[in-house]
Image 1 (tube, rainbow, N blue to C red):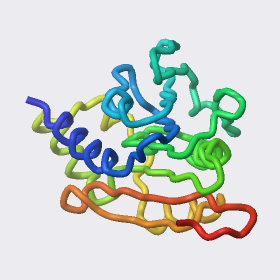
Image 2: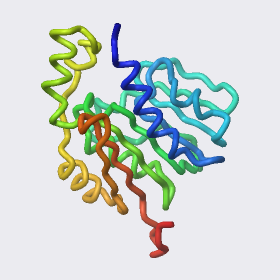
Image 3: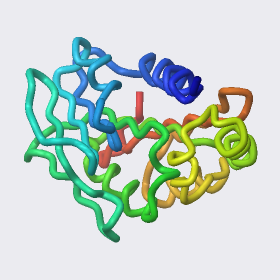
Length: 195
């Protein structure tokens, strides 16, 4: 039995608490199943799922877009003009990409002023544990762990988000320090305080 489904459910539980009623949400790296968007579709005004693995389609409030955001040094997500994205979620994806900064800049640019960004990623501490669970015990999907390009430290991720322009950056560990959630906001340009 694989435990990655249990780990995913825990991540989604953390993120679900943060979805605002009536928000326009973008899920970066949503995967073929786009489970997170399916879970929140009754709560959001619109949901955009972006991944290189999905077939493009529109169904009710959910729109899936096929976009390989990792093979670019500059990322501009293929959102409709005036899409008004309030919240972006990137759940256990950033560790799988080569151009993290470009993707984070693209997320920043896609967000409306005052918009929120939520990211989960395994900690550096989790690397040997995940590799053991995967390579030795076969409890975690080996392909997923081998695909990890980089494990981010708290200070590294907070610094990167701050350099890009995000503010009100908050960090929390979960899953016994093996995973982390980072929350950040895009500031208003007129100087308004973030609520």
